[in-house]
Image 1 (tube, rainbow, N blue to C red):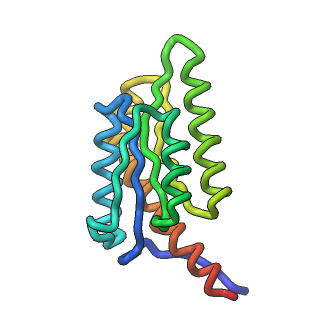
Image 2: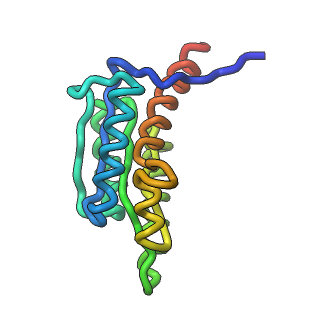
Length: 158
């Protein structure tokens, strides 16, 4: 039996981090967590990371698509926060963001890590951006690091 796994060290690999500015009071903690994970755990050099800022989570897929089209990156990390309000707007933004990022990943055969938190309250968002529930930005970066290596190991089987 063959077992394919990836570690998280990715020295020399290129990463794009695309960040929604909306709900920045939460998202900036996700960015800090992702960058720390890339540099500390993945041993990725700062010059191998590109940070792209967009207005909100709804705009993340189009930015991710352009980054993927460039073929300059080994993975993309999408970060944002969609917090439920009193209207159905949350459902549209969260759903389209998720669907769009998944499409980019499959269309370009490129890991697109989903670090967009979707919560019912501001308190839950704060918990997921570095307090009680960990830092979902760091978790997305670790996922991207691992997937870069998993896909490389699958390629190496041939």
